[in-house]
Image 1: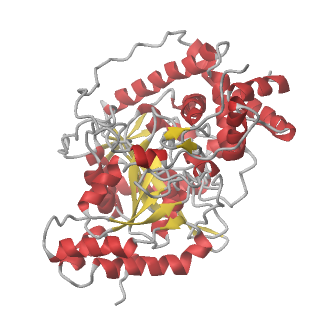
Image 2 (image 1 turned 90 degrees about the vertical axis):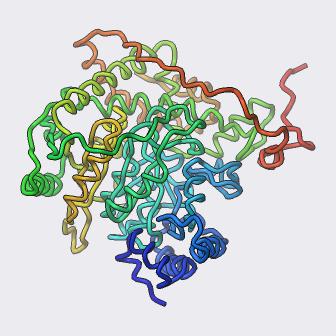
Length: 473
Length: 96
């Protein structure tokens, strides 16, 4: 039985599974076949699970007995390698955790297991989610399915490549400064960073705890919305979670704001700008009111982000000391064990951020950097609050450039950080944001995807889904 | 301006051994990043404000229904790099 995985959606697969057109085992086998065919060139997966067919059989039993069938029963997912699954290796693409097994299920995994989802494997990423190209993986880079010489974006690069390469129907990623949205735009997919607190992070390896969110990566808005509905909600195991919001839209006709400061960003590729302006015209034609808005402090976003993130990273990475779990290297004494273990286990970008974070948190510089960055973060939040009193949505590009070449920016950390210019503001303010495919650009005969990004007020994911689905029609 | 000895101090605080080449490249890169993020000083000097205390709310959950004693022991102990029985084994901390 051949299944057209390329044009498959969650609803279509659900319809086929429940009408008996094919089984969950057939569906999982089709994806395993694709992985076998394509993943040696793409390297989206760090591990394909050995029990995929057994998981699919359990889903088939549920479908056969017509018991507890959900929209996700039998749906094949890939999981980013920083989300814990009990008993399976979860490495965050780091040597530090190469042989570490998850000791419990993350809340999102628990919810998806209850829904009957099938997990195909764990996907490659930048080590501990630090990076924007998946080149910082300790296990080699992932290649963009649209052009194998280019990066898929990051840090959820393996997650997006798994979906873009038809090696999973949908993926779970995590987004601290754009790690779902930027790779989604590089690979022509939908990527949602939910409101801070909308999805439980219990079982997500912490990078920047005041920023991190788990979200779906999918081929269309509807798939992303379905997964979001399953994984969101308050969780006693994550004290930052909030109740599910009221999903009704306040305004029938949505107003879009374009921040004038964002359009003046240095290094915005003319190809991206042209594509963005076409998207604006499309929204106007769809009946959306578009107006200019102002986010006066948005220019400081990257500076604030790359001050606060290293600070949080240096604290969160302190747990990797070779004592309780993970890699252990022997030194001359107890303390020397830490030095040897951390040198052997942590990659270049991780160490760079730990050292920078140690600096901005040190007593002499705390006020100059960490404290100031927090004050400016409050200002940026306030800017967003004011704008969302006036408009329902903000529209900006997702990334200033299309996917770049593997190796092109790896030796220049600042060049890589600048790629995050349009994605970090949503994480700083905690508002939800979604990247939507907006077309392609021709680059030396290869069609490279482009994306636009919509942001809305806290807990107003509904506005993102509404505008997103209008746009993709 | 950062110097090599600053990088050495920070690496010591962070408990990471660094090679000489690494120290040099981190000195250069971290210097460049600090140079870039220095912009925030301009943003704040315009304001000179102190950080506002955010609205606080209590998010503590009730301390009840603990796990049954020992129910996770095996799972967790199996991840210990060094162990003796169910004990985590580490080197002696106090020196003679």
